[in-house]
Length: 264
Image (cartoon, rainbow, N blue to C red; front, side, top):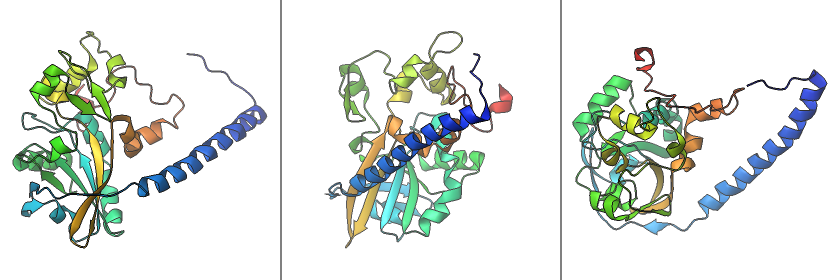
């Protein structure tokens, strides 16, 4: 595609116009952050159990002595042979800033339904050190709308990203990915599912998301959750691509786990 060209003066005029729009978006983002913080806190009385590097843990234990907890709902089900490559790309940024968050009274932890042994093996492969807990056997993922049953898939009982999904033979994880097609036209979701060692139905029973919690006077409260495109701002790769000349340029399954690019 041929892009228009111009003089430096024309570029500066257009850039200043864009700068105004960028500042408006920044200010709007500041206001949204305040609105997030004003959401009512919901007390959690249910006892959730997790398996961690330190042994069996409650939700309060995941705070690791801090008052705030951010959970990334990582797509890694018990039947997966490897973590979701998209979630893996997002998690590649965790190691760097988890230390900064910890020193600001915030614990970041990933949570998945895969057994702890699988999480350990995958962490070693990816070179990650951030906390990652297994919720296998707990209702945690189900209650926070990031895991669904076969019956829900079949009958159209899935509520994800605050929307209802109808029954379908091959449920897909989000409107945007439905537009992606692989070279053999089998669908990119199927291609991603195969990268986790599963089929589309099994893969998409797990969903991505993030949830925030606060611990006050020994009581855990749920404060915020977001899903699907709401996770874009956490995907550091997207923030860079959005500023690249060609943008995200998502014409096919363009991303891999970072140790797989040379295997294509």
